[in-house]
Length: 250
Image (cartoon, rainbow, N blue to C red):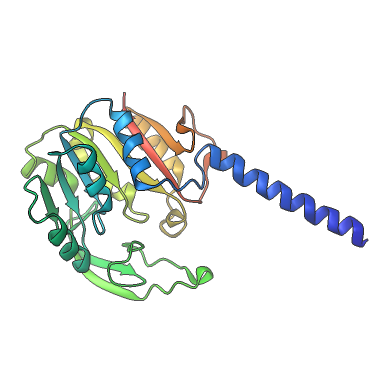
C-alpha cells in the first residue's frame, strides 16, 4: 500500500539518521579538525612533548599545529611523495627542530609504488584503492622508498623516548606499527586513522585492538565529547567510516 510504503521509508530514514548521530557521538564518522586532533592527543600525553613523529606528513598541517602548540618541539616528518617533500622543505626549511624524511614508513625496507588520484594527494596509499563508487580514479603512481621505524629510531633518534606519533598512511597504519619493533616500548602516545582504507587493505579494528592491548596501551576513539575509552573489543566496534584513535601507554 502506498501509505504503508511511505511510512516504512520515513522510519528507515529516521533510523539511519539516528544511527549516524549516535555513532558520531562515540567517534564513528567524526572527522575532527587538525587542531582538535592535536589538542586531544596532547591532553592524552599529560606532559609537554619533546619529540614527535608525523608519519604521513603530506603538506605539513599537523606538524605546523604541533609546533604552534609546542614551540621548539622536535618533529620528524615522514612523507614519500616528491611534490609534498618539496612543500615540506619550503615550509619548514628554516626550522632547525623539524626534520623532513623523504620516505614512507613500512614493515619492509626498499622501494615500492605509491598510488593516488593525483600527485601529492592526501589519499596516497601503498595500496591501489578501488574508489570507482566515489568517482575517484586511482591511476597516478610514483616509485618511493620505504624504511622501518625501528631502524630510524635506533640509528637516527638514538633510542630516545618518543612522546607523540601521528599515523596517517591511508590503510597501512598497521604495517607502520609492525615496524616499530622495540621502539614501541619507548613510545608514549600514538594517534592514528582508521576507516574506509581498511576495506582496501583488509585490516580491521580488531587488529589494532590486539596490537595495542599486547603492547601495553589503552585505546580511545576521538569523539565530539572527547576521548571515548574502548575498554573492550566487540564486532560492533568495526566501522569503516572515518575515525581517529589515540593509543596511550599504560
